[in-house]
Image (cartoon, rainbow over all chains, first blue to last red; front, top):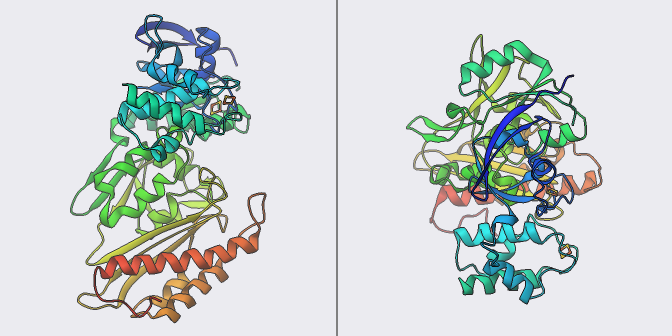
Length: 157
Length: 297
Ligand code: FES
Ligand code: FES
């Protein structure tokens, strides 16, 4: 079938974008390939690992299981928009300080999940922090340092 | 993914006319957490995808004296956290809360979970136990079926190619009632090995079970009503023996499969155990703070 493109208007990290996109493109591929926003990672492509987590209209979601066209008219926060004006977000600082990133592949998704938590619950318990990243897999850290980083960032803010 | 055309109708009428036009060449898209996987793996290759999320009438939870209506594109997270889906409707909130990670909760919908017709769907047994009905729309006529008749097999529902699931209606339970949702899994995030929901109501001013519905998931090609188990308890003031007999009958009626997650015999054992726990918990809830009951240890 001939390629049918759709016009897509989205706001990403406060900036407006308007693009033609094939409906058979995931939001993840759109971010990474069409917009070159490669901070968001693809792990499984199946909604299991959370590496592709973004915040879409205020909700944490896996961008690999969403079509780009579904996001038309919506607002997206990605890892690129978490730090502002060259300054790290308290979560990013805490992840670096606590050694919560090893290979770093899960880190953007972890930070988005952690940010979503702190946006809703500024002083989480360790259990709540662990629960907040339950949809995010990390092969390296064993999660302890990630939970430490989230709790220390929560104190910072 | 193979290429397709995409529509996001704003009204139910527009959606049903698209369905009439494209029928089985199209796939309906709600949250997409199942459909996107199937598109990626080319298990389905529609030429048209119809996104239902922009249709206001399909979204949200409404309560009235008659009962509770949940729109087909209502999110799992919205159901799990809704004050309307608590109390006597609480088991549907528990079922919704059991579906996947936060990311999935924030995207997956009730209608998607049901229409995908996985035998292990966590929202199906609670809704069947609550006597829920599926409200179905098409460009020609609307109809309503008891949810237990909605499922025909794994991945199969009674929806015709020109129909869509509009909402779920749960009739308001009468009198003193209680419910329970139980599930067991390999890991917290995995799909259910077995799940079980019980909803019962007591006879006025007595401790007799006026009516009870027991529904099981992941133990048959469709979510299963355990009628022989219900029959043991209906009209009875049950003791421990009766509860156990009901649980045994539920296990005997299940036809689970062996797969990578678990063996059939383990699943059958779990049916017995979860059913017993669910009946006990539902009874406790219905009886409230009355004295220790004889069915308890
Ligand atoms: S890449 Fe999306 S959840 Fe793994
Ligand atoms: S730091 Fe390597 S996967 Fe988490």
